[in-house]
Length: 284
Image (cartoon, rainbow, N blue to C red; front, side, top):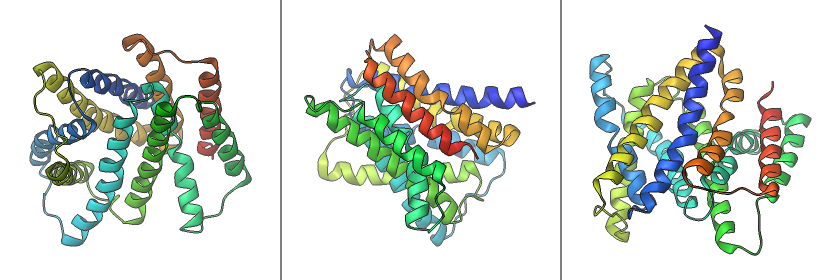
């Protein structure tokens, strides 16, 4: 059973590492981060609705819960996904995923400074090592790359707000299908409103681009989520977190294979340092 749990988590990590490649491919077909983020949620809504009906999960939700889910969706899905997808336009998907993966450190900082959780010496060392690792990615001669790096880092921060919010807002007990459905619903509503003022949706895309977006939606917002949840149920969240670190590594590899992305020695060192820092943080 333990091996089965590890396989589930690794499959989830590989999916999360691979989907950025598909996202990046759609940009060459005229796609935009706003359009991609919208359809990623839109295409998964009917899937979640069918699954909820199949499992007899009530769609009823209170106004208070709906408001809490809105805040979580705003930071965890709208801001996070938009920033992360936008960063793919400036830096390699592997680099972006690695920098985004700093979110466990941001969770620690939020819990320490806002909720007054104590910070262990190991966590401080992990933070320093990870920040030094980020420094290896920065090239002051390439301002566009710096823009992408900042976007990826902020996406990690907003995702940490999402993770803390799920716990502190008391919605962690809500069924995962139901929570995912209402998060996706809020994402679609928010982005439609944004598009009214910005006009950044681009529906004039080839069928291949739409097909890739459907694959991203099903893989990233359903298959990977289910695999991770099942894996955690078998091996626990701590061990699952360790194996989830295959995500940024696989993203670097997939980027090199499918997008011919290159990575420098400095970036490899930075990636290793960030992984060491996150490993120290996740080890209880």
